[in-house]
Every structure is written in C-alpha cells, then in structure tokens.
Image (cartoon, rainbow, N blue to C red; front, side):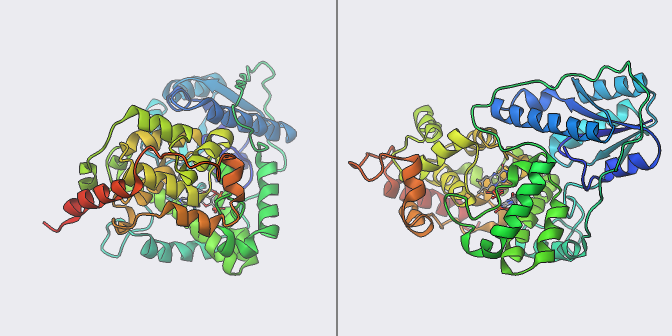
Length: 432
Ligand code: FAD
C-alpha cells in the first residue's frame, strides 16, 4: 500500500508523486490539516483550502480512489496512518519554505526511510540553479536566463491515473473536510475549474498580456494565483501550454512564473528573509509603529486614493493586482514606514493567493529592502500610477465611490514622508 501525501499540491494532473505511487499497487491519498499552518491564517484562506481539499476528494472518488483527511501535527499523523494502513511508501511533492522543510524533516524522522520525494510545484525547484561560482542567485535577470532553458524543455505533464488501484478497506474512517464560511466570494475550487480558467486565459488574454498586465483592476492578468498557491494547477503544465501558443504575451507571462520560482529560491537560500530585510541594513529605517496609521492602511482609510481602493478591494475580494500590490507595499514601507514584517503578514493573510515566498519577495522588492537591488530612491508617484494604469478611473470609482468628491485629508503628508524616507535611506545606502 502506498500513501500520497498532498500538501500545497491539491490536484491529480501533472502530479509526479501520485503518478509514481499509482505505478506500484493500491494507494490512498492524504490531506493532513496541519494546525501550524491553518490556525495562524485567516478564515477566508482556510475556507479556500477546505474547498479545494473537498474538490480533490471528489476527483479521487470519481476514479475509484480514496482521500483521507486527518487533523493534527504531521509528524504525529503520518506515523498513525502508516501503521493503520500498513503503508510501505509515502509519496509527496517536496516543499521548500522554512516551515515546509522543518515539517518534512521531522516527519521523515518519525517514519524513517519511507518518504519518497518528487518535484512538481516549480519549473526549477529551489536550490537547483546556482551561479557559475556555486553561490545562489540574488538578481532575477541572470536567474531567469538559466530558468528558461528548463521551461522550454517541459512537456505535456503527467496525466492523472485513469482509475486508482482499488483499496479494499470499507472500514476506513475517511475524516471530515471542515466547513468554514469565507468573508469573500471564493473562485470555483478544484483542478477542473483551474484548468478551465487557464484555457480561457490562454485563449482570451495571453496574446495581449504584455500590454495589459499592469492594469490596476487586474483584468489583464490570469488571476490564476490562488490556484497556483495551493498547487491546484500545475505551474509546469501552465508554462508548457503558454509556450506552445507562443508570442510576446506568452513570454512575458511565463517570465512571471519565473518570478514565482525565483521567490522560492531566494527564501530557500535565505530563510532569515522571514523576519529580516534581504539587505539587513534596511532594517535600520526609522520605522513608525503607529497602530492608528496601521489600522487606516488595513481598512483603506488613508485618504490616498490608490492605496485605499486597493486595500478595500483586497478586503472585499482577497485579490489585488500586481501593480496595486507594489503601490500599497511601497506606501507602507517607504512612506508610512510601517514595520514591514507586520504589514507583510497581514497582507498575506488577506490574499487568497497568499504565498510565503512570493509575498516576502514582493514586499522586499517593492519596499526596496534589498531584493533584486532596485534603486532605493525610486518612489512611486501614486497619482501618476492611477493615471497610467486606470486612466478612466473605473477601478478607482468601483472601490472608492467617494472619489472625485470633496478632497480628503491624507493620514500622512506624502511629500514630507518622501523626503523623510529619502534622507534616512541615503544615510543607510551611503558606501561605508
Ligand atoms: P499573472 O500576471 O497572471 O501571473 C501568472 C502567475 O505568475 C501568478 O498567478 C503567480 O503565480 C506568478 N507571479 C506573477 N507575478 C509574480 C511575482 N511578482 N512574484 C512571484 N510570482 C508571481 N503572488 C502570490 O502568488 N502570492 C503572494 O502572496 C504575493 N504577494 C505579493 C506581494 C507584493 C507586495 C507584490 C508586489 C507581489 C506579490 N505577489 C504575490 C506577486 C503577484 O502580484 C501576484 O502573483 C499576481 O498579482 C497574481 O495575479 P495573476 O494570477 O493574475 O498573475
């Protein structure tokens, strides 16, 4: 008997662990509801995880398979399931976040020699690409140059098993998928919905992606990120499909998926990014730990149109476009000087696509904290961003109906804040 342990890979297509397990006899799937991950997060993110777990259970059942759901610490749950079912081998897709590595190490110690790790959630798994001198990449462009070689070699991906080898255990307790109400509407869960959304994007928007990706309403992008975050959709399959279609839009889109792998690679090599700026000198900025300012930013009540519209959209939908993410993060870090770790955590838990590595990279890049060495003195002009990326103000009006009415006093004076940041940053950036 083989066990397939699903984590952030809630799918059956292009799933090397499931594929290999199915080659050698009966198998059963497992989703472990890990309190270390689920408890600190938000109801909307738990609801999204549960909805996709339920969809995976249905995908298994359609092919005669069984997916168990067990609550508890994985290094306790896995030994129990292995003993209960007489499991010989556990197949799982490797995880590379600091917690994922810790969890997998502890679980391996609890069932020594039994777990077989596969790759499947990245085109290039973290740690795979190194500079010619053997050190990790710190800048995206040379990393991406190497990454493309692998991307161009990808094939169709692995098909799910047509039928799962039968499991003769009618007595088996399957375990409940919890129900939790979400405070935002969820996208349709499950891999079938994800694959349909991928095909619709490739057909309708990929050809113009390079021109429309910066729209503040996010309608130029694929909005597939919530599926990628839980591995409901295989990034390798998505890259292969896009490159098969080709064109400028496809190359730009695939380059964004290279950012996803680059983010995971950065965090893998520097787990201290969880708490520390990539270049720790930036932790010396004069942070303003002001609860009122933090609350105003969270609620979208800063009096700064772009920031407020974006935060209200996030609160109401769990999504925000990349351009707006860059703007609100830059506002929080460079202008409001909110302690970035607090803001980054809050942000991740509001996003349905919240992903530890991409979010940390996004914050530390947009905030100029050393990722990809963006010049510190670049500070967005928030009004110009709106004029460029939402010229008719349609998105702004949707989330900020009062926009265009009597002027609102912003919570901070933007020009004074910019000067304060530039002065502090110049002191930090000065060569020693
Ligand atoms: P598309 O434009 O269609 O891109 C396709 C896919 O590529 C995305 O679904 C995503 O998986 C990946 N991708 C795109 N841009 C990036 C990027 N800059 N870095 C890493 N991966 C990328 N992305 C997350 O998935 N989770 C996060 O928690 C997250 N936090 C962010 C925080 C900040 C401050 C910033 C600036 C960016 C963040 N991003 C995050 C990256 C990016 O904004 C989102 O992936 C993108 O907006 C999702 O929309 P989409 O699916 O339409 O993307």
